[in-house]
Length: 510
Picture 1 (cartoon, rainbow, N blue to C red):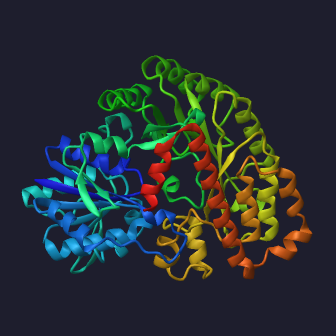
Picture 2: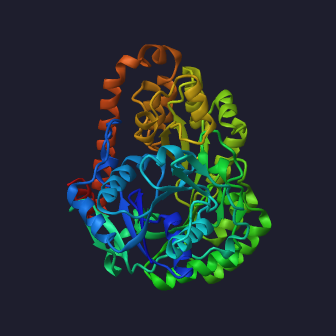
Picture 3: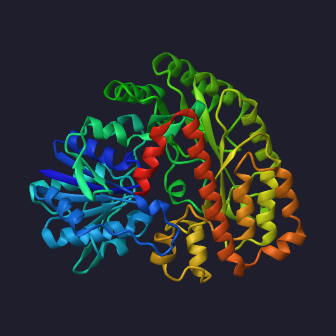
């Protein structure tokens, strides 16, 4: 039986979940086809009401690829809800075959999802999807399958969840066979087969020294997170488990042999640094000997240490990201990220100690918390201005994702009235246009004078300029600043002779 797996994704097509599902289905004897639907031009828009819609041409190409399917499966996060709905509605008009949804969003909103699909897989789906497919292929009742929720004539049937996978080494590696893999090319609105040349262009490009952009392979060495943040659904759902180092290195060697142009490894674990020192001692020795590529990994103020940094930099760590989120003690308690300013500053000092061997770090900050006061936001700015060394910021607008404690709190207090418009369709990478948000945005540029930010954040200026009615003005400032940054990058690329980067940008916005 053929199974088609459809996944709307960010601009890259790593899609760990759907690739692993494909692998376990193949191992069980099924044939699979994967349709990757990466985002495109919508990532350049600032309109919070923007809803992505596929053309009729694209939808028909998707249905053509599903003609031989016995099951069609979807995996997606909340921000891709509209796309999943649109595609499923179209396929329902074409076929009378089971359509299942899975992923983080369906796990927390199964009844909502059953308005459009036939079944929802909740939690870890590897074992459950195989059992579901086996029952379909044998023509027997499948409504008792663990980890599945169904809408039946007599109501909703939610089956119990089976035990989570304890030994992650038992999970097959992600499916990168590329045969029967297809990708949405949004400029032409075509679904094209992935061949070797197409695959080469699909890998994530990461910045390296001398502003080079090199192809990177992204993977995860663990599932879950040691932190239980109230704004994050995935960390609350999964207990932290870790793959063995040998298992991770075996995957990397397979990928490096298969795609010999990969030059960077990106460990995309929520907190790679959470492993113990003994893990990194073994990792350092084996990774240097067997892989030897520069790599990226994420840390947190409570998991980083000098010994870990020493081992990882020696192994090839060249870039790290760290979650700061806020400088307010009150908001940190709300997020359940209780850590002192001193601990965060010390972590930045530690990262800066290795600045000769690493790129500038990225620090993550969350803005637009409706429970924040001006003083809370100022606390974040003040903390950022105390950090050691040069850094960049990854700024996000607080989004109340389903399954999070803050989602429940916001609904109970009437802050969320319409989840679809206020959560699923929210562009979380763009904060509100306010004076203080703009100052925090500027603090993420290492060349911007810190003394100016300290001066313009005194009470006199904050009381004058931090007003809601000024949002149009700050929207203009944000956009002007972004354009200036693009011009600066363009000039730098010209001076370095990096014409490919400029060409790729104009292809993107065309």
